[in-house]
Image (cartoon, rainbow over all chains, first blue to last red; front, side, top):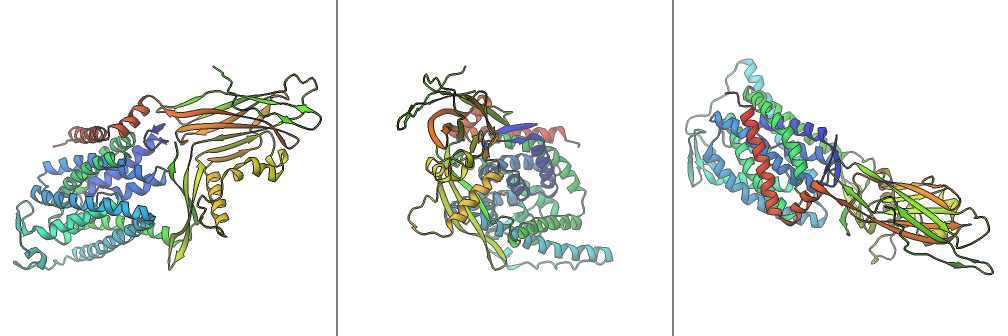
Length: 308
Length: 254
C-alpha cells in the first residue's frame, strides 16, 4: 500500500516503512541505542531525501527510546543524575554539531565527511568492542576469573574536580570527563544525523565502568531528550520533519522496541557486547565497501534547488 | 471540463503559397492534486491542427509534445580515486534543468526534423539540457561528460523520457498524447509545449499549462510544517511520545 509523504514529496510503501521501523526499533530497545546509524542509510537507500531522513527520524527515535526508557525505568535501571549530566553536555554538543554540519554542507564535503565518520567511528568502536568481548567470552568459557580492579584504583580523569556521586550506578567521579563525552557524542550525533547511543553505550561501559544494565536505560533517557530537541530544531530551521514518515516509523518502531528491550534484558553481558560490536562493525564494513570499491557510475546528480 | 488553451499560434508565410496552421491544445486536467494515496497520474494532451479554411486534403503533420516540470539547479559530481578511497572530486552545476521531462512524438525525432533544427528549437531531451550554467570558464573539455552523465542518470530514473510513439493521430489533424506524471513528481507549474512540423519545418506551436499541487491532508501537513513550524514540531513530538507511551502501557508485563 503506497502512501504519499507530504514533506518528502514522494510515495512510499507503508509496509516497508513499518518494517524498517520495527527492525530498527528492536535493535534500539535491545542495545539502548537510537538506531539512527541503521535507519539513516536504509531510508536514504529507498530514495527519501537525506535532509528529510535526518529530520524525521528524530521524533521516531524519541518515541522508541521513550518506550525503551520506561521499561528500564520500571526495572529501576536508569541513573537519573547520570542522565542529567549527559543531557546537559549533549545539548551543547548538538548545537556545535549543527553549525559544523552547515559549514561542511556549504563546502560540498558533507557526503565524504559522513561516510568517513561512519567508517572510523563505527569501525573503531566495533573493533575495540569485538576484541574485548571475544577476550571476555573466551575467558568466561575457560572459567577463568577476570582480574578484578583493585579497590581505590581509578583512571586519572575520574579524579578531576567537580566530583559527583552516582548512587544508582554505584560510582563516584568527576563530571568534567562525562560532560565532555556527552558534548562529543552530541556533536557527532548532529553531524551524522544519529542519536549517538552507539558511542555513548560503550564509552559508559568501558571508560566509566557503569553497570551495563544501567547504561542502556540511562542512554535511552539521554537519547529521548536530545531527539526531542533535535525534532524542534529541525522543524523550525529546515522544515524537513515529515510527520507521516515519522508516524509510520514510530508505529513499526514501538513494537520492535518492546521485543528488543525484553531480549536485551535476558541477554548476558558478554554476548550483548559481542552482538553490538558485530553490528557496528558490519555497518562500518558496508560503508567502507562504498568508498573502497570502484563505483558503478562515477557520476551522480543532486538537485540543489527548485525554482517555483 | 475541457477548455482549450491557445497560447501562441505561428503563421508561416512561405513564398507563393500562404499557409497558416494553428495548433489548438487541451489538457485532460489543469490541476493534478496530490492526495495521500497519490502514486502518479496520467495526463492526456489533446490537439487539433486548424488549417484555416484550407480546402486541400491535409498533409502528414508531425507533432512533438514536451511536458516540463519546474526547473531547478542540479550539481553533477564525479567520483575519483584518492589513495584507496573513491571520493567526489570534480563537479559541475547545471541551472534551469527541468525536474521532469517527457518528450512525446508520433515518430522518432530524427525523422521529424534535422539535427540542427531540433537543436535550434530545443526539441528532444538532449537539446533541453543546456550546457553548464557557469559561463566564467570559456573552455571546459570535461563538461560534456558531466552533461551526458546528467541525462543518462535522469533517463535511468525515468524522469527524462523520450517516447517516439507517445503521440497518436486520430485523423490527420486530430491527435492525442499520453504523458505519465510519476509519484515523485515535484510540485509546481508545469507546461506542455506542442510543436507541429511539416516536412521538417515548424508550422505551429502552442503551450498549455497545468499545476501539480498537494490537496487535503497532505496540503494541511505541508502548510503547517512551513508556516507554523514550532507548533508543527511540538505536535509531531507530542504524537510520537504519545504512541511511545501507549506502547509501553499496552506491552507492560509486570
